[in-house]
Length: 184
Image 1: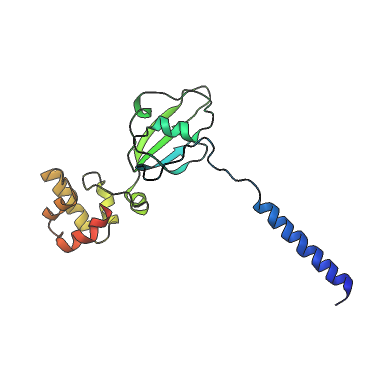
Image 2: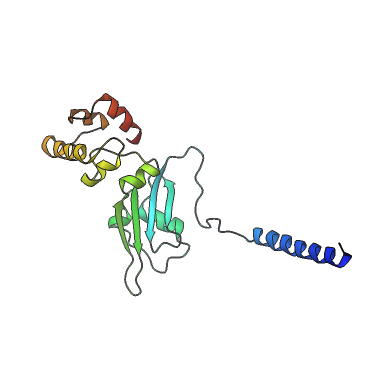
């Protein structure tokens, strides 16, 4: 191979390597303004939605409120968020905090709950008394018929109290309960 070709190939390889090196050296977002969690500290897993600078799933210290979540993730809110109502409620795993910032309007914070599918994916324990009627069939081994039986039993006899309370529903025995227990 001629010397000029080898030099050209060497220069192209050098340029590619240099561009990859520089690209890898670009500083990334490191969560500025967020307080790190201490090892062993209890946490809650929540989803931040709406007008947060970086919406998504977050682990916050146990006892955090929606206002804490805003202060930890918003570097400089354009206006002071409300301090009462939904902003002051202590968050629990599976909550969804939605922040709405409209021009000229006060900040609006709403709280909701993650769906069963999302909670299962994030390994957030479910509670049989808080599952919506349409969500029972998302659990393994529970089809539409058994789902209707569970909802009817809860309506007729009241809260289950724990996953063991599901044993009173016809069609759920010890085997099915052991299959479901890992989600509760």
